[in-house]
Image 1: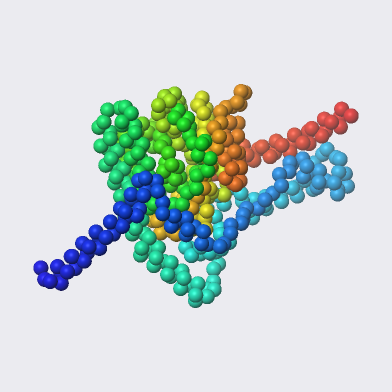
Image 2: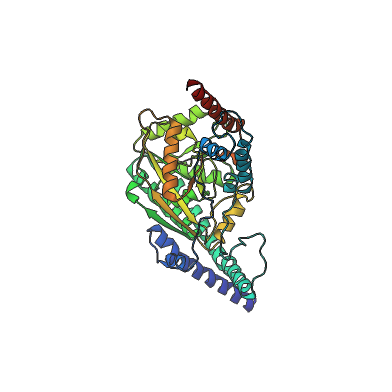
Length: 428
């Protein structure tokens, strides 16, 4: 080899040695022990822009109240028959739904009032100044030239350690030693993965953290919700068995910890799913189950309908509210627009992922309360704590159409008002 090639190889070797040494000393080792130098927290305080709600607040009024208000200025406000003016209510509600649809806008990224130097927050953006363009270009160089390679290295390190260590722990006999090592390995690897996202997480009310034998339910914004929660405590995951890299990770994880994986053919068997979940929570030595009852990712402005399956099991439910700060990076996964790899690359090339996690007091089904009512009560508590809008709509509307029963409910409600008014008049 020529002297130039020798010098080049030597410089590359020194560069990689310094790179991995810095990663090990300043990021990986602190992540293992749950420590932080406070650099991320200092960065989070630098933006001066403030978030303001962009959701239109509407005062809740009933159909009957609004019809009375419309008829008040009519020729016969007390009539019990159909009035042509009643159509104004339905026309207004229809136009409101078109202009400000409270359902479908939950499946797209939240619009920001100020630009965070990531992507344009307005599709009609026009050139403002050369200075702003230069700042954006400088941000691209920093994010893709320095932050992205650093975070990719951390992500590969975290996932590799998880696969290797959980596979090794799987050969140990069941007992306290295996449980202890499994918990420490999971926490270590998830904390390294959190560093790969530059996630700045604030946990509130840790005294309410889920206990063994319970079910942890949380609102769902992104696949990284799992990492956010698992970096502060261990959980038993629930999901479908995949192939490829994800399947390899699942197989290694289940060797060290009793996660609950289902075959594709088993997912639709509600009784089988309920039985396996119930058997898990009955064993108080097993980790709490982590479930996202919405069943799909919502853009972190609201909480949509919780599926009742997790609430049919006789177990204590530990609600958790997760709220992301979109000023630094949008954590919402629009699965119809971005694939998983593309989404993760967008996360790793953002400035940071900032979020707050609230552990709510445990909740149990009350006497005479069915699973749907219990699910709605838990959902309302999560929405209230996280400052999210509580919606009754099913998240399945992301890919499906509105059921006819929703339309029929409005028709039945209107007919009941007319019939009820006529019955009152006949009695009087």
